Length: 311
Image (cartoon, rainbow, N blue to C red; front, top):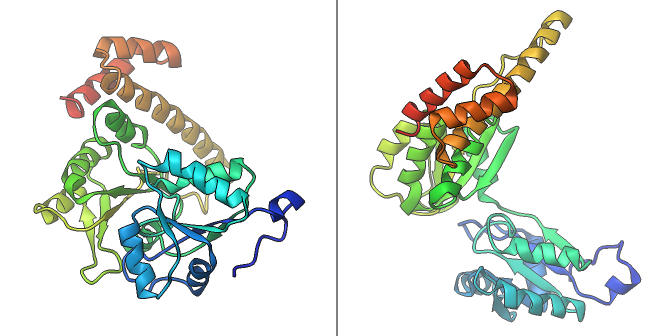
C-alpha cells in the first residue's frame, strides 16, 4: 500500500487518504507503477466515467469497488466520499484521461478534502497539456493553461478578450465539434498567430498540426476526431535585453510600464465595447477619464476595435 504522508496530525492518522491518480491520456501503457500500486491498494476508486475506467482496470486486472464522480453527481457523491475518508478508507480519484483536477470535476473534491484537512496525495503521471506543449515547438515557458473556453455568449467573448495580450504561450482544451468556432474566435481576438493543434495524443492516430491559425482552419476543414489540445503562440513581446546597457535597461523599463498600461486600457476598452455593448463614444469617454488618456487617441482605438473585431 502507498505510504501515508509522514506529517499527519494525530487526528488525521485515523482518517484515510484521497489519492489523486493520473491515468493514461490514450495509450494504456502510459501509467506509472506507483499508480497501479495505488489503484490496487485503495478501498474505493472514484471515476469520472466508470465505463471508461473499468477498461483500464480490466486491462491491469484490478478489481476494486468503482463509483462515479462527475459534474452531475459531485455534490451528493462528494460528501459521501469525504465521509468515507474521515472513517479511515483510502479513495483513489481518477478522471477519464490524464491528471484529475485539471478541467474536470475532480478539482472540487480535492478542494473539499483540503478544506476538511484530510490527507491528499497526488500520484503524478500523464497530462495532455504538457504533452501538447512539448510537441508544439512553441516556447515552453512561460505558459498559461486556459482550460476549455466558455461555450457561448458574453463569457466567451470576455474570455478571448481577457487573454489577448498575455506575453506567453497559451494552452486550451477543445472538443472536435467546437474546434472551428474556437479557431475563428482566436483569429478575430488574438490574430493569425502560430498554433499547434494536437489530437488523439498517444493513440494510434495521434496528430500534431503546426502552422498559423488560418492554416489550421483549412487543415481541419472537415471535423476533427478525438479530444484536442490547442497551443497558441504568445502575444508580441518586447525585444530581448540580454546584452543591454544600464541606460537601455532603464529605457526599456519605462517602455515596459507604458506597454502594460496600454494593454490594460486597451483590454478594458475591448471589454466595454464587446461585453458591455457600449457605444464607441461611451467607451472612449469612460476609458479616457479613468486612465487620464487623450480622448481622441482612445476614440480612434475604439473605432479600430469596433471595425476590426466587432463588425
